[in-house]
Image (cartoon, rainbow, N blue to C red; front, side, top):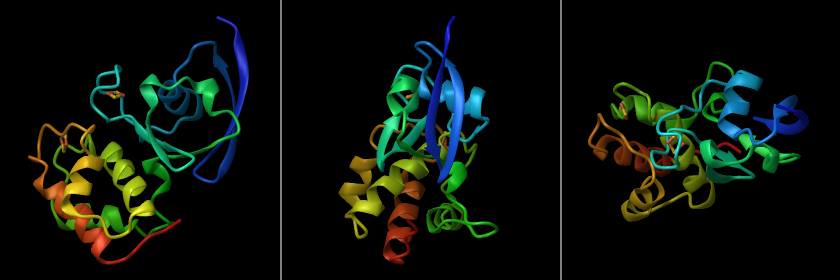
Amino acid sequence: MPLSPLQFVLNGREVAVFAPGGANLLMALRDLVGDLSPKFGCGQGGCGACTVLVDGEPVLSCVTLAESVAGRSIETADGLKNGPHLHPLQTAFMENFAAQCGYCTPGMLMAAKALIDKNPQPSRAEVVEAISGNICRCTGYEPIINAILAAAGRGERRA
Ligand code: FES
Ligand code: FES
């Protein structure tokens, strides 16, 4: 399969790879760049495990063409922490027991980040809506919703 050069910004850092034609963004991030934080769940746009932000908007990277993000800014869960300091969402997930197996967690965190970056004081209904495309098989969702509300309630954000 022919390879095409692809450049984008990942968590504030310029990256350049050669991607096979038709490759999806999840494959490019995991296999070409080595960022394993977005997860492969269904591969069909149905579970949210692969959620990343493209120019601040949540997208399902398994159904996003890699070439469509050329020159754009991608955020993944790997970029949330600041050195040894967790992002407030990560702290809130920990404190609220919002992760069990953790497979859905990177996608949940990114969906939540997209929400509170735009809407720092979301209602419970807005949190539920924001994560409605993200499936969790473990937690029953309540701890996740509580964690997102807790992070938002602190008024803590990081660009
Ligand atoms: S792996 Fe992308 S939505 Fe399930
Ligand atoms: S913590 Fe296991 S799928 Fe959500």
